[in-house]
Image 1 (cartoon, rainbow, N blue to C red):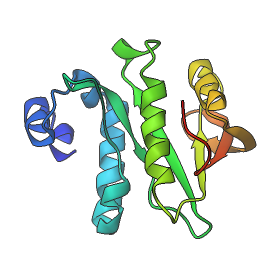
Image 2: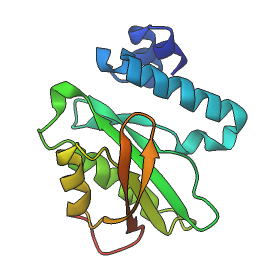
Image 3: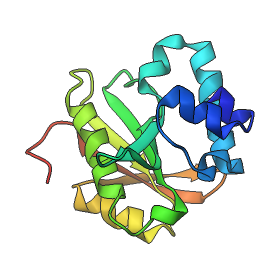
Image 4: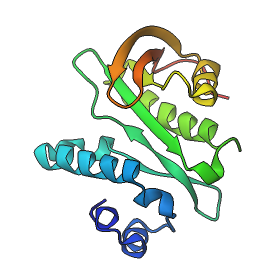
Length: 161
């Protein structure tokens, strides 16, 4: 993340072991790297919960990033976040990315609920979440997206397809 903040895509790729695209240097991505680095500096135990590259296939194709916003809270809720790079959208990559996040959540005994918030105009992501059994449980104000719905699903359930 530090290399990405410095604009050094090749060093970030070397450290991470995968080839990253310019998507990881966008202003929105840089905001995320700074935010997550600050969180990890304040609480190093958060590292294992933070964002990672979303890699698919044997060739290590990096299609975006995904992770948790932090460890589970006191009632066992964890919030997920994921983004597919523009060049890979609408090609079915969100589904395996979300599947992996849900598998990781299900493997953690402390997690009982998985939460996601999606911009109300992101129709594709809204449909993906609902397809995984997420239900709308409320709404919140987001500085970037405005009023957005909050979705939740149980962390452990039947096999994911």
